[in-house]
Image (cartoon, rainbow, N blue to C red; front, side):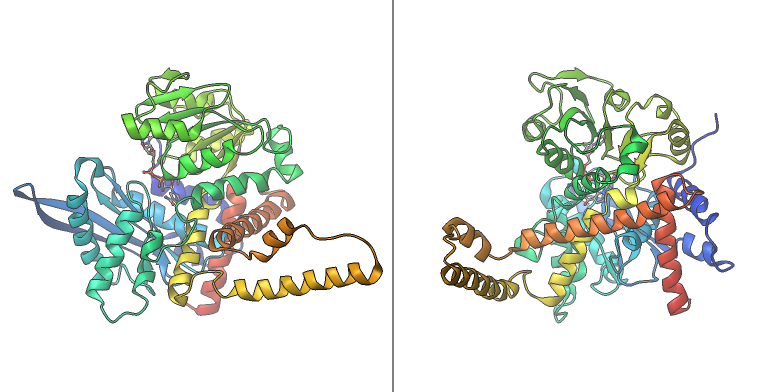
Length: 474
Ligand SMILES: NC(=O)c1ccc[n+]([C@@H]2O[C@H](COP(=O)([O-])OP(=O)(O)OC[C@H]3O[C@@H](n4cnc5c(N)ncnc54)[C@H](O)[C@@H]3O)[C@@H](O)[C@H]2O)c1
C-alpha cells in the first residue's frame, strides 16, 4: 500500500484529475494550481514571566479576485503545507459558490486551550499586527474568518486591532468576517457552515440521479447520521439535521471517544455535556466507545467528518460503510481514500461545496460592512408597503365580488412583518447552496468521463478561475 500524500499533494492530485478532463490554455493549469505566496512570521509575546515565541502563517493561493479570503486556524499542528492546501481549497470553494474572492488561509501554531482569554487576546493582537502591517489583513486585500480553534471573539480582537492601526479607514470592520453581531457581524454567521451542510443535503436529496447513486431512499427522513467533531461546524450541522423530520444522529465522535444511540442523540444536550465535562464520555443513556475514530466505520446512511483533515485515509477507507459522505471539514478524505471509496461506489459531497456556507455568509457580512447598513433595514418598509397594497386589493375584490372570505389577522401580521436579517441571510445561503449544487450536478450527470461530484466541482471552479485569468490577463 502506498504512503499517503501530504494534504497539499492530496488537493493537487484531485485538481490534476479534473484538469486532465479540461482543455485549458497551455501553462494555465500550473498557474491556477500553485500557491502565489506564503508568509511565515515568528513573533514573541511576554507571558507568565518569560518571552514565548509563536509561529504563524498567511498563505495567498490565488489573487484572480481580490480581496482574498480564508480562515485563521489555531492548532498546534498548523504548518505551511496545511495552510497552503486550505488556501487552495478556498480558491476553488469561492469560485464554486460565486463569492468574488481569491483564496487564502492562515494559521497559528498554538493550543488555545493552554492559554487564558487575556493571554490569547495579546497573542491574537500581536499576530494580527504582523499580518495587518503587510496588508495580509485588509478590507480590500485579505479578509480572514474563523476556523478550527478561533471564533467570534478572536475575529472581534482582529477587527479592533485593525481599527486601532487604521483609525481613518471607514471600512475597517470589513477587514475580517465572523465577528459578533455587536461588533459588525451578521445574523446567522456562527451557524452558517453547519446550516450550509443541511441545505447541501436537502438539495442533494432532491435529485433522483444523486439519490440513486447512493442506493438510498429520497429525502432526509429516516436517515441515520454519524458526525465526527462537535465544534462549530459539526454541532450546527448535527443540530439542524436532527430537526429534520425523522433524521437521527446515531453517533458522535469527539476527541475523547464517541457516543452512540440508535434512537438518536439529543445534540444540544450532548453539547452542554461537552461544555461541562470537556468531552462526550459519560453522556447519560448512550453507548461510549473509547476509540472514537472506529465509529466512522459504523452502520449509518450519512457520515459527516467535521473535525480535521485526513480523518478518512488509507487505513480506514475500506471499512467505511456509509453510502454517502459529506465533507463538512476541509480535506477529511485523503486522495488515496477518495480513490478507494469511489471504487466502492461511495458518494462523496466534496468539501469545497459542502462547507461553503461559511464563506457565503462571510461574503454577506463583508458586503454589509462595506454598505454600512443592516440587511432588511430599508427593504422592510418597501415590502410592507407592497404587501399592504396586495391585501387592500384582495379585500376590495372580496367586497366587490361578494365572495365572502377574509384574510386572517395572523396571516396579515406574518405577511406584513417583512424579512429580518436572519431570514435574508438564510434564504441567500439556501439559494447559493442550491445553485452551486446544480452547477456541479449537471457536470457530473452530463459527462460520461466525470464519475464523481468532486471532479465535477473542480471542473466548474477551475473553469471559472480560468475565465477570470482570460478576462484579466495574468
Ligand atoms: N468554522 C467555519 O466556519 C468553517 C468553515 C468551513 C470549513 N470549516 C472546516 O470545518 C472543520 C471544523 O472546523 P470548526 O470551525 O468546526 O472547528 P472547531 O474547533 O469549532 O471544532 C472542531 C471539533 O473537532 C473536535 N476534534 C478534534 N480532534 C478530534 C478527533 N481526533 N476526533 C473527533 N473530534 C475531534 C474538537 O474537539 C472540536 O469539537 C475544519 O476542517 C475547518 O477547516 C470550518
